[in-house]
Image (cartoon, rainbow over all chains, first blue to last red; front, side, top):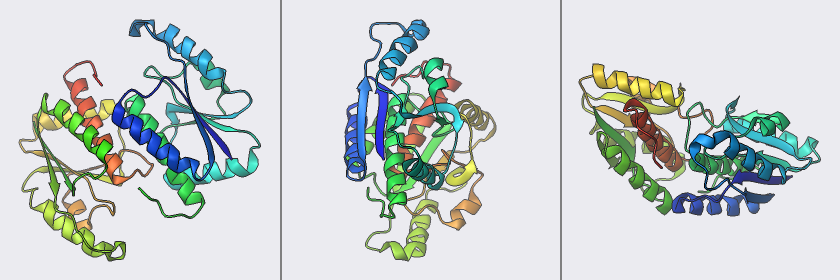
Length: 155
Length: 155
């Protein structure tokens, strides 16, 4: 399985950034995995939310191609970690394409990207900051790989 | 409202620890809030899980008294951030006691503590590392206070 993770802009918080690198290293020891921090819309006020989401969607789309797309959305399907692991395992054996997770910026994802999604999943009913959600996703991908491979989860 | 947060042992991961302090500072600007990192069971192997949970439960109980107890458990009630804020707001106006969140260690909470809980809530259907769950809880308490007070969420 080849995993790709896309989100707009570099993680700014230093601690979250270090945690991100920590989990990416762990994931990369088990699967081919690439993170692309795509171009973010800068210099626009939050009120221009449609324009921000459009600019960021265009940058994300440039990296998607014919991948199997999993969008993280608030009203997506919730799974247990075990179910998430089995979901990824099934994709690995059935989809001959790159499996790409797409995480929105602080305003979320544009409808155009959501329409291309093969799956829409949610990490929680709660809303978390988009940078913390990145770490939650990475931790969960790492956890699911340890479940799939029957390895002990190592912090 | 007086908030208290209890969990066994100091957060070991340096980045999570810094995030913890970051959110605690933000929460403390809005509500009285105390974090107590209670005694953890050391020097025991994971196989002694019952003993570990018992030792940690005794240490947690020493700080509970007659508080309103909210335990974080995997099969607890899930809420949206808006619902969580309204839940805390209602407690603030109706419960004349300290509102105490109890988070288990890496083995979770002992049944004895769970039986004393006034509420059992879950952050997600997914399982996260217990140290990451701590940050998720703090971020959520901070977020809910901004919702209650009608403030802008500031990262």
